[in-house]
Length: 499
Image (cartoon, rainbow, N blue to C red; front, side, top):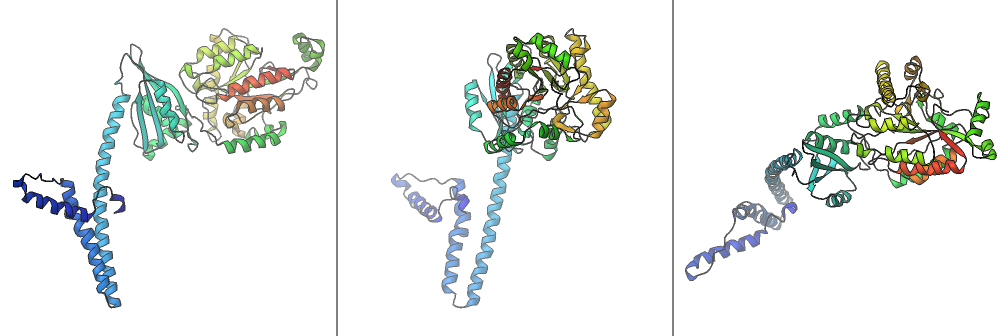
């Protein structure tokens, strides 16, 4: 009853309204206007008056007249019986309302589908904000300007959300990602992946378990992008403290790959310990700007994971900015390439090769291969290697020394004995790192850059994740901080092959 206070008028007011209408009806001849009562109010009068007022008054009278314990129990029995009748009637009304609501939701879904399937003006660009509250609730709104879309986008900080733009290019309607973010509770990235899938396929999912499993499978297969969730500031703060205390060369090298430890290349010998120390010292002297610098300069290998970009549109890639930074500081790096992400980014990758940088194998998908069949893992490695070799040929580079054909990095650091056997049969080595700052989790570019600078040593392999427009943008700041810090420490970053 309390839930329906706004819908049900108090019984005494309805009785007064009925009596007033009757008295006024008798005075119609005198020019008095008759009060009309809607059909819904009439149903409330006919149904709720006997159940509420009469029922309540009857119970009160029973209690007042009850002189014995048996009569009081009888009155309580009547109260329970009529309460069940009332709850049953209210449940019927709720079921009816739910049925109407479902029909309204279906209509709303059809309207959203029409907006997604191309009812777009050929003269104007539209911005669509989609919000993922949970698997059963997805909303979508269309705005004429980017500013209006971003205002709604920024209001829903507790939900996964995306902004897409739809425009007509003269031939067909194009869908382009403007902005996206996974909620802190969406650890699997289902929200953004679901919204992108709905937009790409012009459909609305009903939130069934089968569809959720389908989205999760597409993420695991690399068909849909995994957008990491926003991390809680307290978690980041605790992780920073842990890294300052624990993230040293030996601990990072040990925990960098699991469950198979000590079977990966985590760092190189220092210049003084290397078997080719004479050649290294000669090269240092050739590159150094002064004699003291030649005696003090150290070398580190810089690797950038998850290249080029998880999104297929070229506007989401940060390769041009990364390339500009590396040119500014005269640094060459190795980009660990995810094979399935190369589509539409071939030109950027070819530009990296032509500029003196290296591409190395990071398998076909950005996921763990720990529990895959060994043959399937081997096939994925071969497929990614073929893509990289083709990019080198298209870049006009045939010198094998320019390509670290031997270098592989296990995605997510998951490395097993079976995977090691597959790599060994192909002449590959799993290259991990000894300098790392958990850049996918710690969303602080200044901290990541400074930590990498302070913990690297001569011969270190530095691991930094590739920045993207919609994911890990702070890694671009971290890269610049790192390059500045290395220059200050008189350390030169070079690719894996040259190291």
